[in-house]
Length: 152
Image 1 (cartoon, rainbow, N blue to C red):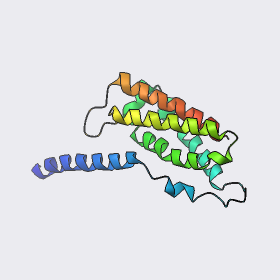
Image 2: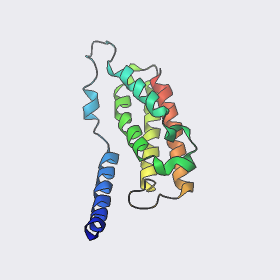
Image 3: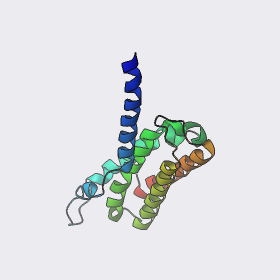
Image 4: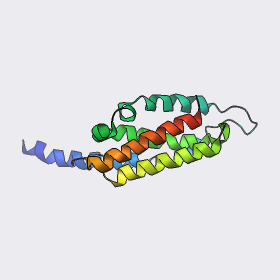
């Protein structure tokens, strides 16, 4: 039993490291190469981005009351954060690039606040509902704006 008890803190530390690494997100350089050539042809990634955003938008963390669901949304936050570079890469392919950029900035800000307020529990209790619920609600709203900006 003592081996199990010492393994738990190590597992918690490993989980924390993995969560922080995931929240760091992927660099934008991996999404820029996905565009089609500069000949004005439609991007092959725009339909995939729309599908991904539609899927993320159905997540319970996007649809449930933020103050209740936020402790269970680590995966959702990573998904939202990771889709922003792809959305930015497609800004030139949508009807209103400025609207998309503004929505992407709002998503980034909401993710940063959620992370800074330590809302994702990793071996610790979640952050306070008043702050974290508001942070997630802001992220939900920003995600809806991003979905609208990318189009259907």
